[in-house]
Length: 364
Image (cartoon, rainbow, N blue to C red; front, side, top):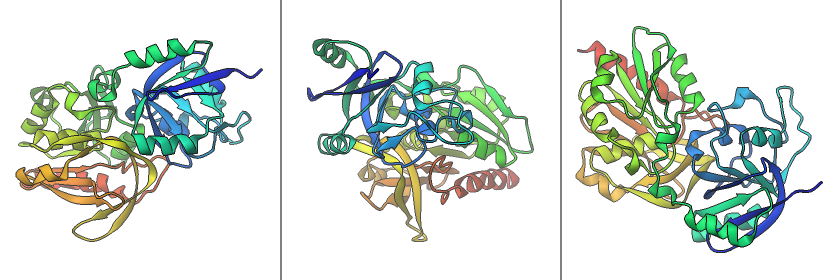
């Protein structure tokens, strides 16, 4: 039996399609991703908290779902919008269908949407609030939910995804890293573990003194969802610890670090989401293909009055993709070097961070 579902947009558009997943209603900011694979990794990426994910690739669910591909313990996206959903996946690791995956996580999905047309609308008007209803509901009720939904930029979403207490992933080694968890992905943790360092995940609210008491050698500020300006107290923590140990940032982590040192952040029209973003290193001229997922960016005009400098830029639109501090051991990138379903060009970031830690403490 076909289940009718609705997708309501902030501009008043209401689209009908076929529902899959959970029979519920969820609101968020609708965004599109151009990746051709990796829907499990994307749906479980904490950076999609507060957002309704739409895939531009026309068929999703064809290789099913496996826990091996999760980037967190469950789905973080509010809802999923696709052109066509595969009901009979084929993959040796598949444990369930995409619809079953959404249903067990209380997440609604809607298929039969002209995602090409909707992507063009978002590119023209920008990311907007939306609601997916996978059960019977009137248009007026949908629009009321939409009106009451807060904007992404006004929410503190990091507090919804960060760990509540420190969690040791790999026991202490010669060198040890704390991950300030703003919504860290599993692949980031896995890459740090592969560097043969001790790894501990800590809440985003952890103070500088609490970090010192852990006796770590470096801190990674992770990726995560939402507006970096709404993450409480973290800028003060970063400024203090960077005087005593190397600090790195990925995606939201870069934006938070930029704010901590006086740069400005702005919300992009529709953001970067996909595994095909070209980035150029300004010193070497080398171009990396990168995986990206972000709504906010550093204002490059604001960097000049700070002690930061831009080291990499996006070749599509010129936005800053990496920064470093002129005197302190701080290194950041906007894209995702762990690149779950995407290019592996930039995994060297983890080598560089750990080598910086070893050199910094070895020279003291």
